[in-house]
Length: 320
Image (tube, rainbow, N blue to C red; front, top):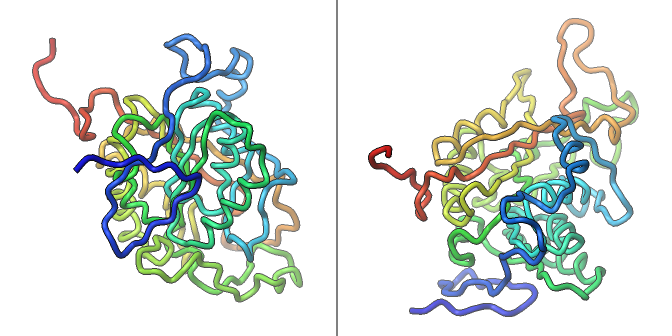
């Protein structure tokens, strides 16, 4: 059966019945950049982006209320990644769109963008944020309520120029918050002893232990790989975590898993958060040195190698 094109600005899926359509959205360049350019940046802008440690500031449009969403990144972060790895008119995908920051940045930068999330309330939040922005755009931004495992049902192969996301961090948030990184009395704020997990849906990656989380992430991103154009990038924002006095290296697990699934790691970028973190308490003194996880996170930059076929598998054959 031929796939039907979907026209709406926002799409909600009835999970009880199968889906048979692809989204009608642009994915080709609308700028006039030379064919061999990765992006629309000037040489000066490119040089600034070569630094491997990035800092960002939040702006007035950013969402920072953890009661609405427990983990958001700034619009500036999404904007920098989108500017670095796409051209105007190309297609950006966020498989865990959450509060919709990627879609807002896509609107600002004239990129087409699709975001997916399990929770209907987050799709509503995306809709609300997009409705406050200018509608005079040639590019479209769409929020879809569905499982990230189903994204390939919505998007044609080799049409995506960038995947950017901040996924749930295994079960890091699925426990009572003790605020050990805060000073003294500041620990007992409104977040103290709260469980800030996104949901208790069994499909939610935030309910999973690291081994199951890594495998499920691998399954999801293996399904996304054929959607990427050859040499198109995939940026994943993750921290590590402490659990019972051990560092749980989420970023290492993801690198290993995505390499198994056909991705190539190109860059590891540090998101330096020291400019947005304040009133940090003493942690581990005097006998147990521990770096503060709130002060930095990883931006893992993968791409789809060019030596893969449309199914995401490496091509084989004689070398000529």
